[in-house]
Structures are given as structure tokens and as C-alpha cells.
Length: 297
Image 1: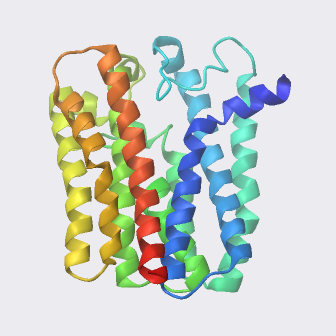
Image 2 (image 1 turned 180 degrees about the vertical axis):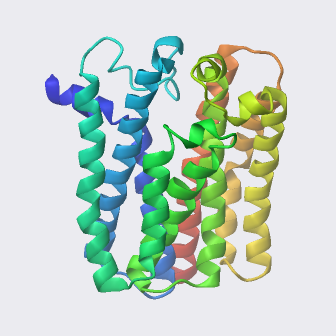
């Protein structure tokens, strides 16, 4: 039972994102002629540890600020639900987050030494996004960029670099939709928490701009992600098979309609957040599959 509590503290339903990001970056590297299974697994482990760290530290700081005592939990927002009833002590959760991040450091050092120093800036920026997100960046007016960069674009690019020991323009172009999608994942999940976040001093986009304008930002960025894929294919920066990612467009349209709606219906927003999660995950999986198909077919 105790082990299950620690497991739930990691918010495992969101850790699937690490699998998806590692898969996409590695698939693109394989498309470009580089693949080592050991590197892929080790990079995934490092990414997973960082993801656990950001989830757990976010839970700790949200509890300390009182947010978790104000929010109504959903499957996609409101924290893990472990700290408010005292299933774990705040100090235990803090150390869990810190240790998870520390365990990822040797993996990063190994890849820097074996694959090249150009990986260092990427790791440093990613680590800063993990550590600074909840206590500092959420109070600065547009925090959603940090997950988009640190848990979206950079992990995909990092998994690519681990395999190829190089950055290429097509690889950079490829990682941009991931950044946008993860940005939007956080953005839409913030809508139900506006009042609790405001009381705690946060300045998320739904608070700073209002939910209507934040919904417009979400919608525009969703469109940009799909148009980016189409444009990259047209410019031969991504393979034609990448267009299978457009299969998630109907789900994205449903999420956009809910984000633009001014009727605060919890059930409707829950469906929108579910569709948004599916868009984020499936779009990137399909992009990876597109890169694989472009080689095998």
C-alpha cells in the first residue's frame, strides 16, 4: 500500500508523455540513420526521472501555497491528492522530487561526455524549467512556455542528439510542434484552477488574460501546430508520412470549441481536457510513426 502511494505521487497518468517524447525523438534519429537501443533506454530513464521530479515538486509547492486545498481535482488537474489527506509528509515529497532530479544528473553527464558538449545547454535549460517552474515561473505572467520548452521541444531534440551526436535544422523544425502541444497541455489544464491559482499568487495565462483570451491563445497555437507540420512537409523538412498526425484534428477541434466556450460547465471542460491530452499524445506518436513509415515503405 505504501509503495502504491509513492507511485501515485508521481502522477503516473502524465508520465506517458515521457514515453511519447522519447519515442518521437528516437524515431526521427532512426529515420536519419542513427539508433542505439541502449542510448534510447538510458535517455528515456533520464527523461522519466526529470518528469517525476517536476510532477512531485509541483505537488509539493502547490500544497505549501494552499492551491491543492482550494482546487477541485480532476483526472487532469488539481494535483496528486496525496498531500492534503496526509498520506505522505510534505518533507518526504520534497525529497522525492529532489532525489529524482539528482538521479538524472549522472545520465546527463554520461551523455555529455560520450555524445558531446553541445548537449549541455539543452540539459541546463531543461533542468532550470524543472526547478524554477512552480516556485518562480508561475508567478511571472506566462509560465506555460517552460513546460513547452523543458518538457516538450527539448526532450525530443535531446533524444535525437543522444542518437546522432548532432543537431540539424530538420530536427529543430520537427520538435516545435511538441513544444506547442505541451504548452497547450498545461494551458487548458489551468482553466479549472483559476481561482485557486489566483489566491496563491500565480499568474497563468487564464488569470492574466482572462479565460476568453487564453482560450483564443490555445486555439491559435493548436492551429499553428498543425499548420507547422503541413508547412514543414511542404518544405521537405519533414517526411510526407508525418501528415498522418493530422488524424487527431477532430479531437483538437472539440478541445478548441470547449476552450472558446464561455459556459463554465465542469463536465464539458473535463471532456475538453481529455481530448487535449489525446491530441498531445497521439499527434506526437503519429509523427514518430510517420518517420518510421517513411523509411520502411
